Structure formats: structure tokens, C-alpha cells
Image 1: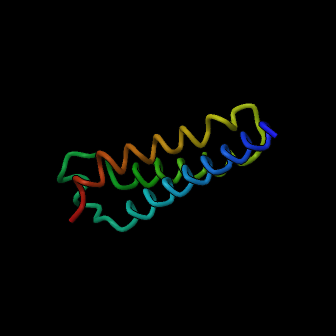
Image 2: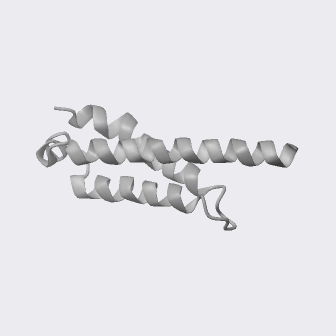
Length: 92
């Protein structure tokens, strides 16, 4: 029973990380690329790559691999950096 609860909690956490990464990617796609340069942040293409990579890591976390526990958390951290630091600066 404990293993079932642990698996369910991990599945919920993985979905939450994926949703966070997708939100960061969608917000990055809608921002003006000139504002990234004007605010002293890296380019829009860099952040699209980072948030896209975060989405990929979160999706790969659903497959059983030795690192499947860390991949959604790493993706969520990448997305959280964009949402907490970059997005407020480049919001029009």
C-alpha cells in the first residue's frame, strides 16, 4: 500500500512539474524578443530552449530510468527560474 501511495504522489508531482514547465514555455513564446535584450536578460531563443528543455525533462521523467526521480524536479527548477526572474522583467 505504501508503494502505491508513493507512486501516486510521485505521479502528481511529475504532472505539477510538467504543467509548470509548459506554462513557462507558453509565457516565453508570447513575449517580445526585443524586451529580453533591453532588460539585460539572455535572448528569447535561449529561454525558449531552456523552457523547452524543461518540458522535455518533465516528460522524460514519466519513463522509468535511473534518473526519473530527478528529471521533473530539474525541469521545474529551470521553468521556475524563468517565471521568477525573467518573466516579470520582460512583461510588456
